[in-house]
Amino acid sequence: MKHQLNILIVDDRPENLLTLEHLLDGEELNVVRAASGQEALSKLFDYEFALILMDVQMPEMDGFETAELMRGHTRTRHIPIIFVTANHTERQHIFRGYNAGAVDYMFKPLDPHMLLSKVHVFLEIYRQRIALQEKTRELDQKIFQLQTLQAELEEKNRQLQLLSSLDGLTCIPNRRQFDETLSQEWTRLSRAQLPLALVILDVDHFKRYNDHYGHFSGDGCLKLVAQTLEDLLKRPADLVARYGGEEFAAILPGTNQEGAEHLAEAMRKAIVELAIEHAASPVLPVISISLGVSAVVPSPGCTPGDLIQAADKALYEAKLSGRNRWVSRQCLPDTCIPALN
Image (tube, rainbow, N blue to C red; front, side, top):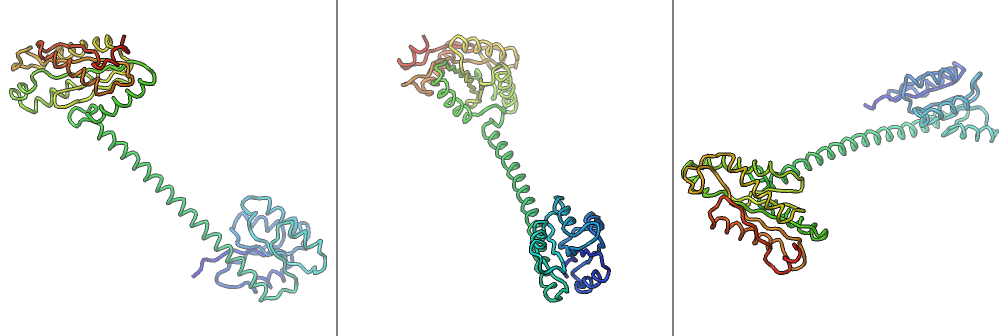
């Protein structure tokens, strides 16, 4: 069963209202009567009408004035109005009705079949408009849901990307993030012709620590070392990553050799001051680190791999010379060396 639709009939003569009401009688319509333009306007606040049938000749406020007032309100301006009139001849009279907002004219005496035919057409248009509005609301809801899901998906992707760039044990950037950041900073500083420093460090005799204290304690030691190193970096662009096993690396954009050496010494001291017992170490009775330092102004012919190789060789020298120290080397290719001077 179709939902009842409201239709407003307006006429100052009761017999005309009765006639219209009788002609429109049916289960699908709820016919609302108004005996004047003022009363018709008041009914608009109580109902949502699918169609208005309105007499033109009414005292005080005729159909034209009533229609113009209806058209002036956003809530009612789209309700179709069919004027009912006894005036067949005045073209100006008819044109005024269309200008006032009428969609059609019917002339008295009314032809019942013509009346019902026109009414059904406008009611079907109304139903289609309501159905379209409902579909639009449903579509808007679907779009909102999709936008919400997209936002949730983007957030989950962001979290996954973040997790994929962090080391699972120490929660600092991993080797993958280190490689990406070094490449990006190399390109950026090459354009700006600013120095890029790298510190690679290793926990001294960490295998002996694991063998002596167990892997659980070893994991705790690496976490504490990682957090200490990260706390020493003050600039947003600086990055410390777990380079592999007990090895860490710090990327220092805009830092020259001297600045990197200063940070390396601060790292060395901070790790010793943690006072993590290491009875199996021949270096100190506590955990210590060895560090390799290098810096370069990226230039043609020089690659990030050259900087890594220089810092790695410096780390090797630090280990050979007794550990718990840092060694600094310039980038090896000849094209890199002049850029530092």
